[in-house]
Length: 152
Length: 152
DNA sequence: TCAATATAGTTGCGGGGGCAATCATTTCCG
DNA sequence: CGGAAATGATTGCCCCCGCAACTATATTGA
Image (cartoon, rainbow over the protein chains, first blue to last red):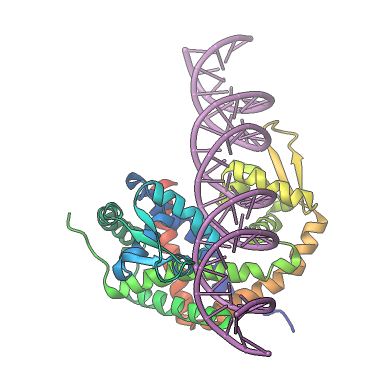
């Protein structure tokens, strides 16, 4: 099949996307440093804070954070040492361990969240028109849906 | 100042963005495996291929790849071992080294580029309406411009 | 019932990349 | 000129994380 090259507009969109995303993430991450968190920690805490009983099975947490199980095991070492999350063995299933948000972790998240959301506003949302925000959501929704259709 | 929370729409856009971007990058990267490249290698080769004489000073290349100088030094080890890029000392300035695309590197890039662009189409561009593509470019353009204004 | 298989989690190993320190070279004044 | 500062690149050290191998527990089915 002949190569379907990208039009200049498409190429501009793609380039803009890949070149800017990393910068944006780094900038947002920088605003978490005062709290002693990086983006991975923040997302882990945020995910737990929204879960029933503020805890999740390791494997479910790994999936939602886009980490392998081993990756999560290592990241847990960090947040456990800081006493933000505790590892709790399941009574029902001897294989299962829960990651459980501690009060200290919840407090830290409550402190960091407003700053974090402010960063997201300042560095992204507030720069966009409502139309662009809507396009963003629908575009990534389609991309995401397509990816899950491909491999679960 | 009171926290300016994100509206549900804004939160949806943000979540969709961070949760999908990583998956998308991984999927696109997977299509480069048959060529023995990862996304970092591909971008390095692509950047060099577009430069005058298909070579760039290490520090300029590092900046455009969003790597630190040390990060680039390490990545160069890989592509130099594969003979895709050569390290060339500058005659004019004893401090400067150039990263220079080899014929083998150029050939590999020419072979991989159509597949890569096809991945970009299949996993992203073709899923979007022209309006969404335009929004993408303008949104990331604004974000990028704002970031450069902040810190060069 | 009890192997075979599936599932949950950890560990060893290796690669990628950042930071700080270092070295070499060049440039900038006093 | 010659010392101070700037610039370019590399190295040591460390963290993050994926893969493959491994352990442990649970489930399944002949």
